[in-house]
Length: 481
Image (tube, rainbow, N blue to C red; front, side, top):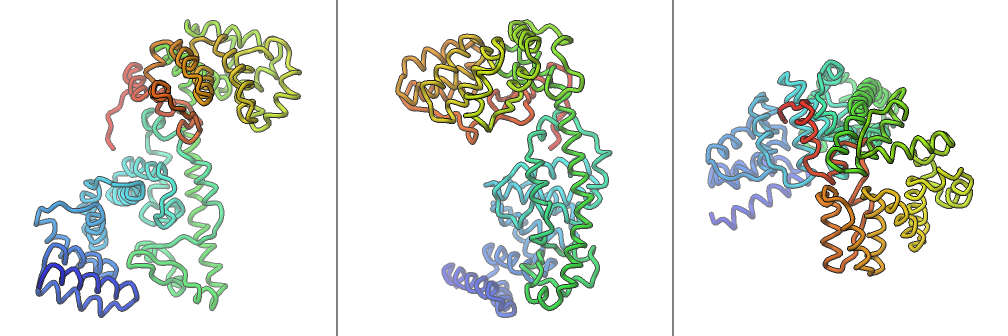
């Protein structure tokens, strides 16, 4: 049989499987396995037998493929790991999945989800937690609503119970503190849409719910609309069961969020000192403000001496002495969503020192920009840059607008005023390259997201700065996953 004929028969078997003709599909693949057991046939056999729930038979072809030592795709390796997982070969499934090099975000999420489940079942709870958190780093993926399913999954049930006792290093907290915890919690607030279940969940749930479910494929079951319509009371009970299982896990996730945030927030003043020692004024300013806003009992009077920030701290102290409410409103961006109100009503009523402060000028530039007044935004940010000559935020903002108006020489002169350390940031490099090529550049929140809780890398503007901080402050712990 030619390769073309083999490919045609494989395509036919997969098509029959998709329309529910399982026996016919299996007959074709069984015949191919006898007559022409090529690598392509065994790969298709793994796919088909997994779909049919014949995991031990799928693992036979998986072993043959692995013995051939050929290069396998990520999708093939996932299928092999699936067959091993459900045929009782957990350690091998874990090893296979860990070896996969994902090619896209969806594969990354599926891999981390699988590793979280498998490492937890192997008793590697600390590693499972890191994989679990890694899952939430990947958004906008079509993986059976994984960010909802993960809170129901029976393979992770013991992990949720153990999370409070699993130690976390500062590195781990810094790595995951800006995960979209609140968005994930909001996504899981509703009982609907109901979460799909897998074969292991089927064993964990009351058997009376089984009659409601139909297979989406061999390892995934969803509620059948016809069964739900025929037995609404049982369907409601199934939804309530899901909610009862998920609720304490969401509580554990909230507590984990708060624990991680507290660890990183506790370091903000130390981060400010570290960034200042490197000459990163803007980053140090943000860490300092985060400390003032978030740390219990934080106040300007008890701050340690930070040489680079001395003028800024004196400016802050003068503002607070003049009007604490105005100072707090400025550094907390209390009027972020009210640009017109801020410019028309709030800023003019502030007392002199607060009205003319660096934060007021920075905020005014942002508000003018949001309202489309480019000239006023450039004026405000340029004034802020004059007051804060070492801060890259107003400089880069003004340079962006100058480049948009093709005022290349002014933009170049402005960004080249920054200290050398700021020129190491990825943002400065992108901006400088664009201006040299006479192109505009963007500082949008999509391409340059501001971290909710700042760490030394500051949204990856200073690559490697987190590790640099950990090493210099002797908070280094080896990377394990």
